[in-house]
Length: 398
Image (cartoon, rainbow, N blue to C red; front, top):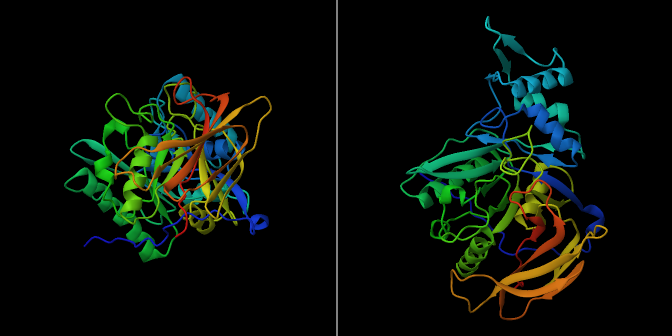
């Protein structure tokens, strides 16, 4: 019997003017990989990178596994990989690193578990490490991946008789664990255009689908679509119209790294630091972060920082935290109530500068903001990318 959590949040509420003193922006990434699956580095080295680069929270989301039990990683003989092992050994020392050599000199390392490495990095109010899994399923060879963030137990791929059914079954399994254990957690659909596996029609009738990746830093996920398949922003708007007209909660979007390559940085590899979320929460805890995410109090970004996002009485206010010499374009995208389900979103307003306001009109169905900077993205997903941010959609309270 499948289980579905009833989601009760239906309107994004960003009116925090009376709470600002108790709220803070937290930077985090919920999608990256280590030696526990198909990443190319040790969990501790990855944790250290994110912590030293200004992140407040991080989740390693390896495929269909949690970092628990005993696992040994055989280190490739390539000099590059041997050098990385030596760096790991030098940084953490022989008392921490457990390894062995066979008679031929082949090195194998016991990977540290989540319970081992978490206390090494986590600091109250400074850095949070949440356990996660990328639930990696498929239907007739089409990859279907859903991030399960702050999970307590590993979740097996549920399978199904269609792409849509696989997604629904996997979503249900995550919500079942959340309800049964009382652990705060949330799912997000990863890279729909990876091998062009997930289409608009597959997502239309999903229940409990609240989050997906509008931006993913892996070079093979086709964020922008192609001549045949739509890109992630168009998918987002088309789904939004469907969901609102069906009476479903708003669909929110994240930016993530999906990093697999942690030791060599260049276009064409999946590196850390490409996309993240900024969450406005009361404190740096899983409960506070997930509550903020579920009310839409966050934005996705590849580099643009916002000093404020407010939504009050149908008015969406955007304020960019400017960098010297950098110019910004603030776009408001949305749809009207007369738009047919599945229609495209439209550009409603565009402002050049660091501040912009959009007052929702009676005919507006929803609106979201996209902020594009004149600064090229460092080590981009694709050459020519500019640093960009996306706020979450809002609708006028009824």
